[in-house]
Image (cartoon, rainbow, N blue to C red; front, side):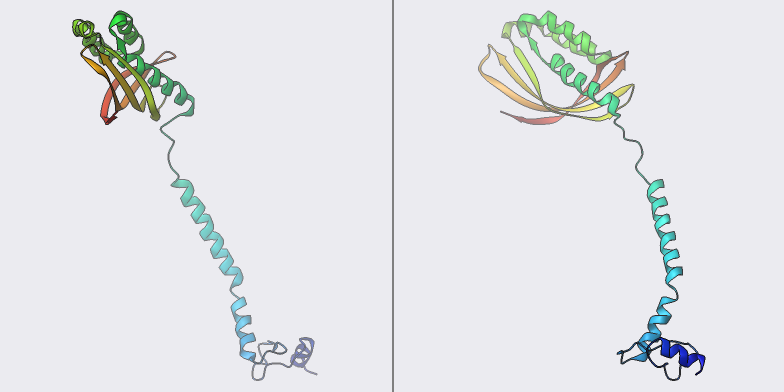
Length: 205
């Protein structure tokens, strides 16, 4: 018995006619001998294909690593303190009562700095008589807040505030909402308000 014949016998079938040089055995019960030959030929490039796939995967990981987003503009360590300072500082800056105007002005000096402090104090001082005559009272509260940027020196916070205004000139209480962008600067271990920009009205009630 030739080596081809022995190979066919061990495989459990006859060698493929006309293809003795390949040593490919026919699968028992398979009516198409050429299908087995195609399977054998398709299995040859399997390892090179896996190698190419691995290279592509590694290249993809490298691309994701080098194109990953940069460091967040919000540092967790400064987030809470800046947010709390903005919330409480804006309430102190925008609330006043004609009966406690001196205390309100002093409070502004404690929570604000720079031009914002000077301009806010000047505004109340210049309107002191008007505020007193009208018995004006303004109370604000924070409806929503979020930090957009914070590091060890300055921060930016977006706020939605609700202002309740009362005066002797009107029996009706006026309630308004505003969107504000608040800038803060850090002095020592304290965050102080350094600028406020109105980004629009959030509606009246």
